[in-house]
Structure formats: C-alpha cells, structure tokens
Image (tube, rainbow, N blue to C red; front, side, top):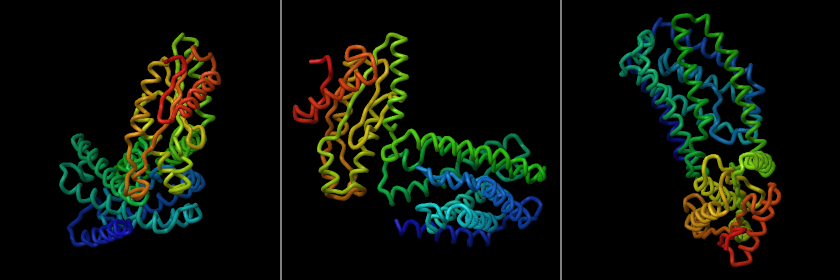
Length: 403
C-alpha cells in the first residue's frame, strides 16, 4: 500500500512537471487571474460549509465527497495543468487546516494522497480537452461539444474513483465493489459536483460575475447531504451496512401492517453464525468484523432489493421477506446457508489462518399469519426455530410449519 501511495504521489508530481513543457492555451490568457478567482471562491465555499463539512467527515462511511471538485474541475478546463494543480493544493491545504486536522483518523498523509489523486484527474482532463472535438472551452458554445463534456466528466470520475478504490483495497483488504467505489448516492454526488464545475467554467468564460450564484446552491446541497448521512448513521449498523435492530423493527412493523391490509403472507428469517465466539477469540475482533461484513454481503446477494436485512447484535441477523410464505422463506434461507458455507475468506485480506475458516449459519424461518399476526410473534417463532436448528447440529434451516 505504501508503495502504491508513493507511486501515485510521484506520478502526480511528474505529470505536473511534464505539462510545464507542453504548449497549452486558455481563453483570455489570464490563467493566474482565473486560478486566483477559483481559489478565492473555493475557500469562501469551504468557509460557508465548514461546520457541515466537519460533521460529514465524521459520519462518512464511504469514499468522502467534499465538493472541492466543483473548483478543481473548473480549473482543469480553464487554466494550464500546473495552475490547476496549484488550485488543488491550496484548496486542500485550506480544508485540512480549517476543517479536517482535528477530525478523528484524518491524517495529513491522507490529504496529500487525495490532493494528488485530484491533480492526476485534472491533468488527464486537461490533456483530454486537447484531443476531443469541441472538448475545450471553445466547444462549450456548440451543441456537439456536449458529448465531449460528458466524456470529460466521466474520465475525471473514473480516474478519481479507480485510484481511491485501489488504496482502499490495499489498506483494508476490501473486495466488495460497494465498499471500494462507494454507494451510488456518493458517486452521484461526485458526478453532480463535476457537472457544477463545468457550469462554473462556462460562467467564468462568458458571465464571470454570475459564478457567485453557485455558492448558495452548494451550501444547501452540502447540508442536504449531511442530513442524509445522519439518517444513514442513525439507521445502519456501521460494521455490516445492514439496518440496525431498531430501524429493522420499525420498518418491519410497517410491512406487517401492509401485509394485513392486503391479505398477503410475510416471513422472517433469524440467522446466527455458528461458533462465532471462536473466531473472535482465536483470530481477533478485526477478522471477526470482516466475517460479519462478508456474511452481510452474502445475505444481501441472496435476497430481493426490497427485502429487509438487519443485524440484531453480535452474530445474529434477521431478514424480512414481504409477500413470501414459509416455503419460499425456507428456500431463501437455504440459499443463504449454502452461500455462506461455500464462501472462502480472502487470504490477502485476513491472512492464511483466517482464510481456512469454514463459516456456517443456523437459520430459523417463520411466516405470518401461520406463526402469529405481529412482528414480535413471528420473530419469536423464527427464533425458536433457530435454537432448534442449533440443537440439531447447526448449519441447518428449520421452518415453523414445515416438516
């Protein structure tokens, strides 16, 4: 990982140095003035959202989008790559000093790496504008330039996401696409900031005094993202990304009420990892956390998008299956059991000893109305079936009402 990080930083330095020797033109010829204006606007935006940014950084559970991309994308399009790199460095130094340096786990080397990733993204974009038809600022005036602009946004996003995903993979041993690339909500936010950056570049060229109108929407967007992050943190188990117990129960009660109104069946699975205490005792809690995440990912892969997966605590999970009878629930439970039994932990992530783990689960299934009318009744029935599965030797699925 250290070699990769240093390699990215060295590549960024060499890229900036190399672009100094390339012919590069920008509309207006006042690159320094444009760079200074972007720095001033970026710093002003950061000051307006300083408190929000601190809280967002605290609750971030994915690659963090700080919205500086609005100004770095504009710099990539408006000024030479060396000046775009300078804009990036100044804005990230300001963010570090004013918003991040006191945040838990936010070390200076992470800021340096993030700035270098952005510099490389800007450099690639600047070079791309020289080869795409209508890709540069002059192309903004023609409708056909829209396709080049879309390509520029996509390339910036891909370069940035790929470089960050690789360091997450190397540092944490993650293999899940969601955890490497981040959730769609985070990626859509990054794409939105890049689109705003393109608009800032266009306004700076034709109506520069209108750029200040971008600041209020950015502030509101920042706050709305914070609200979503707070909601996510309040409802989600941070180790697995599943619903926490209280959130699952609240949503499950709503689904049970809907099932009663519509006269449909609804089922619950109680899933418990077998011998999980031995994993924590023998291999440590860090490996145990990776096992929990792996089981959560496997469960999500075997259910529908609208089924509710939650963690009840420890090594116990719960799944709500709307419009599903006990027979269908037993089939889903069996798929989950087999998927977990056949799963092998990544040796690169957990080590050779942990990679030899053979995970199994015991699962109890129950359905409404056969096992009861309320969430509590069906949960209790599924829990009793779970204990029966454990008593029968573990690595089994037992269902209330099925032989």
